[in-house]
Structures are given as C-alpha cells and as structure tokens.
Length: 444
Image (cartoon, rainbow, N blue to C red; front, side, top):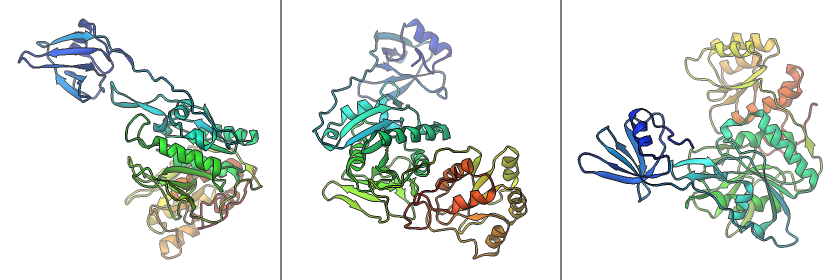
C-alpha cells in the first residue's frame, strides 16, 4: 500500500502537513463546525480531487469534501492488519492423503478493511489451518503454486498446474484440490480435463464467491466438500466444487467440460449445462452420484497429454457484424476460431465466402451456439447448410468456452486441418454428445 494512495494536489499537501498516512486515525474539521474522525483510507484515481475517504468507527466509509479552509489532524498512527495463522488441524491416522494446491482467487483472499478491497493474502496452509474440519476428512497437505487473479491466467498457467497435478498423482496422493478464482475456473477445469485424461484420482477445483474472512463466506463449506470428494468420491475426473444453492448444506460437483459461471456474485454461480452435475454432497444424505458413465477412481488408462496453442480465438457473432475479424486473425497467425453463432449455429451469409477461403487454406472454423442449452444443428436452414459446405465444423452441444480450450489443445498437437477436425469431434472428457464415457485421445 502506498503512503497516500489515490490522493493528489492540495489535499495531498494537507495530509502530508498533518503527518498522516493511509491507515492512520485522522480528524477532519470543517468551518461549519462539523467533523469526521476515523481511519484515513486510500481512494481510486476516479474520485474527485477534493474528497478524503475516512472509515468511521461504525465501519462505514465516507467521502468528506475538503477545501483549504478545513483542518486535518493526525490523531493516532495506524496499525497494519496482520494475519496470524492458527495451528493446523490434527489429522486422524489412516485417512486418505489429499494435497491442496493454491493458485489464488477469492477463496485465498482477505478483505483489506482500510480500502474495502479483496486482496490475495491467504495461502493454502492458512486455509487448512482455518478449517479444522478438514482434519476429520483427510490427511491434508498444502502448497502454493502461485497466487493470481484468475483473469490473469494464460495457457502457461494451465500447463504449470497440469504438470504439478501429474507429479502429485505419480507421488501417490489420493486426491488433488486446486483453489482457484471463480471468474475463469471453468476454463482451467476444461484445460485440465483434456490434459489429464482418465486420472486415477479426483482433481477438484474449488473457489468462493466471498472471501474467507467474511461471515457470509462460502469458502469453508466449499473447501470441505472439495476435500471430501478428493478423498472419498468414486469418480476420478476433473470437477468443480461449489455451492448447489444459497445454503451451506449442499455442494455440487460439476464435470470440468460441462460447467460455466452463470452469476457474478451468487453462491450458486456455477451450473452444469446440457448435463446434470456429476454428483452432489448433501449435509444430511451424503454423496449422491447423478451421472453414470464416469471415470472410476483407480481405473486404468491415465494419459497425460499436455500443451496448448494460443493461436485460437472465440468470436461471438452479433447482428451487423462483418467477417473482417477472421481475415485479421488469420493474418496475425491464428490457426482457428470457434464461432458463437445464433440459435442452431448461424452467422450472416456474407461470412460464407470468407470462411470458405480460409478453411480451404487450412484454417479451422468451429460452430457453437450462443444458447446455453441444446446443440448445434446446421442442417435445418439454408444458411447452416451453406456454412457446412464452406467448411464449418458443427461442435454438437459443446460449450463455447470448452470448445475454445479444446481447440487450443488440438492445435498444439495437430499438423493439418483434418487432424484438428478429428480431435475436435472425438469426445475426450464428456464435453460433447450427452452421456459419453471419457476416452483417452492423444495425437502426440
């Protein structure tokens, strides 16, 4: 935290003259006799230059309009908040060995009460210490791989996570839990599903919508459910563990290729699309498996197929949109796109000549739908049939986000367009075609 973050001009000079810094207790006196006392807070660069932000004793932040006739006095020096880790929970002997790997996100964050912002602050070891119930579920070990907001993830981070999970599987853990930011967690889950095919143990991604130090946090219950599944669930797939609804009494496990974040802030933000959740863990009824055909714990055929290309793109079509974006991407070295078309899988007819030219040169064009539910069917209308004749590949009921990740994975290992098409249309991790048992697919 900078000493005077967000302040400038005459107000910054007044704060300096008072000898105050962010976090100190200050008193602001105005000529009309009003005064405000509280902790000096940082503010965003978008705030008006004359506004001073103070956290009052009741916990609320207020913006105080200040001019040179006001007085700012430093009352007391502030204390920087510190997090003291409690001792880890004791584990009973003979429990399954589960490794928690931290990558960041709200579940590994705390509120900075001077600013109200959520910042990465808690390690995986801290989370284990804060949730003593984990000691009754598994012999939990923890580590931090990195601490990042999930919107900063790239294909590189997917590769680092996959490699670490493979190492842990080789070391004999009985389940892996990955703490992760929720905003792009479904992309990472899809990526791991294609790289870590038919794993022998569950790989559970988990996040939270509210930081772990807030009374309404969903972090603890999500983490307990994730560790329970990693240690004891009969399925061995990449899944996301999050609240089934607003209450803490049910955690859903969504297959990594069938799930999206559907709400910005609700505890039950994640939903399985074109499929049921793989299973639900209920406080009263225990684990209920809802989908058959899953990869079983301890089954054979584990395949590690790493690698992603960043030469793939996802394009959402809208009315009036021209096809120039395709030429631009091809000129920048991209090798394929997933189109999020309307309805059954359509874009404007003026796109057809451009698509035909690009696909004839080896550029992949796949079609998913903007509709969350249902499947692409481009044989119903003339536009769809003409797009197929131009070389567009129907992606069945695959989610557009999952299709993008799969295309990144396919482009890394395919040398020509036909091989990309084959990989995209071969079910690997339950990503398309309804209830399909995942199969191992690797093209080098």
